[in-house]
Length: 322
Image (cartoon, rainbow, N blue to C red; front, side, top):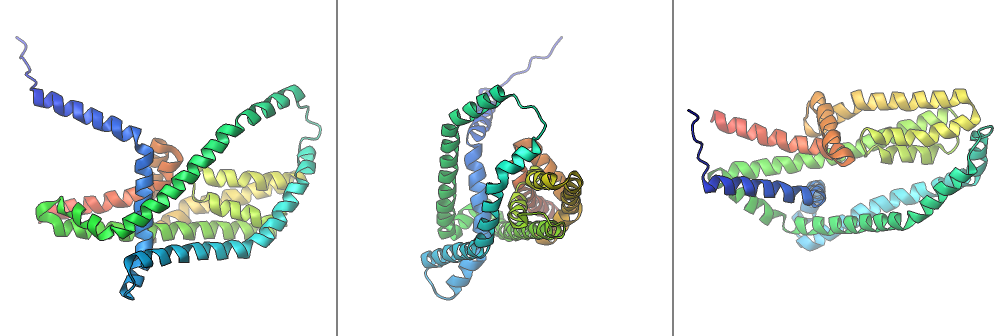
């Protein structure tokens, strides 16, 4: 005789609330990603803010000075690199039509199809403009959110630690560790971009590829996007080399492949291991899992998320041993 299973109304309510919570999290996933990025920015900027606070400056002024310094450093870097970058980019733009015609020389292109594709592209310009505007608003929101989180950092840490009642001190220690590791991850990511950009510039210069500086800058910036970023950055360099000679394009492709392999198997794991203390195998697996779950944003945030989980897991294990 089958046993009768009684399900209480509390269980039904709990399951319903759990499903509703998952649905809400899914709906606001973009906001949660921005919030997590703001936490990373707070972790990266906190040491400089704390330095100014130790100099007896008001907290608001310390945060403002930190923003000014970061923006000034970025502006100084851009000012130093923009003149040669603009010169080479202008030469690339001016020479693009001959390069395209040379590349497609002898290839029959359906002009009707090309015209329809251009028409479709023009119709999508409005949606592209809206997308750029949305991204700009997201960046402004991120900067403002980071500012206020830096301003309320101590209160936020205290309130978060107080949720753990008797383990408040351990929770506070864990929060500090997470902040330190996330800040180190930002430093590691900057080092990666600098290394990849520098290697690309040296390799392209040795091969005498035109427009080496903008191509190397693209490689350094696209390094922020794991997996697909290096592939995208290689396309314009291979295309330009192909207009010179097919053999040279193969060599350039091999150069980018070597840099990518060094990056994936040596540079990324070692830099991130020193920066955040993660095992290289965990770094590779985290990036693979993150890209599968959330695409580019998941791959980009995989390492800091793994850092958070590692610290939390270590605290739980240590708590069980006590």
